[in-house]
Image 1: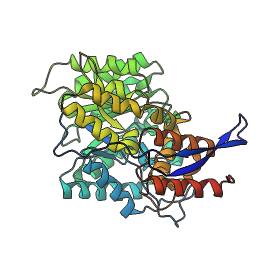
Image 2 (image 1 turned 135 degrees about the horizontal axis):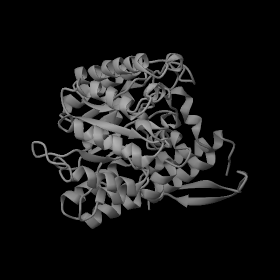
Image 3 (image 1 turned 180 degrees about the horizontal axis):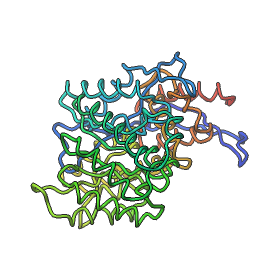
Length: 408
């Protein structure tokens, strides 16, 4: 234990304060940094952006980023041996981070990664198209051409910065595609632009409802068949796939389908789990293989994730799984429905740990979770040793509760 106490409220079913509990915070977990590269798994943490605390980061306003805090957060992840997946949905792509700020994030993050020899991959999508532009698009050839050119522009921004490309799912493509063949047509053109193998990202509707019917079908089985056809057609250009459907059984099936592909230059596409609910079992794997990782939750738990992966490297699969499993309840809470607002929890934990001066997100998204949700998040983070500076966390919790109308 840390010797630091804080009084946390208890709530009734209607959200009224119904008592309080004095909690002695735990000491941080026994987290370690690796002495060399992590080798047993490839792991990326999808990182958030920190706003300037006094800027107009309100809904609909252009993002104003605190670059020092944002990039310092990435250096902490790299120090722990993980790669950074940047300019992804965790960084609020299409959810507060506009294209101008996104381009600067890609360039800055890639330059910082190069300065320390770290790995970075960045999202390329179509969100430079305004919602009004997308709404005016009609299904068919003209709309597909607009989407394809938008993808190409972003792919080149990422590549020119020196980062690996993650081809993100596109809201605009869901609007203009008439079926699986149109998805194949656009991705054929986009992958032709790649100068190194990319990661394909399949983002489920729990993360973005506007992506319903991606790959041309509401049927997961049919969509998976289309996805696999695309991978087979372009296997040399695909490093791996990130699947964010929160369905462990589906992921294992897809992982095995990828493993059954013929090797190209000795390699097959990786399955980067995007399952922020079931990641401990998926990363641990089974006798037929394991998933690598590209996870938003890793931005919140990177010290624990790194320590777990070091255990896997050392041949201690049981120990690695145990560490990841100790964080699972926290991950499930942060990513609880509506999952769209998981970034709020990541920013709250970042603030409690002293990595940003204010609890805020661009686009005002820090308002996306309730007081009750955030208090429980603090309890769960404490339970798995993820409050890294207990005195600071306690002081910030007290201030947060006071400003939200809760006093001891």
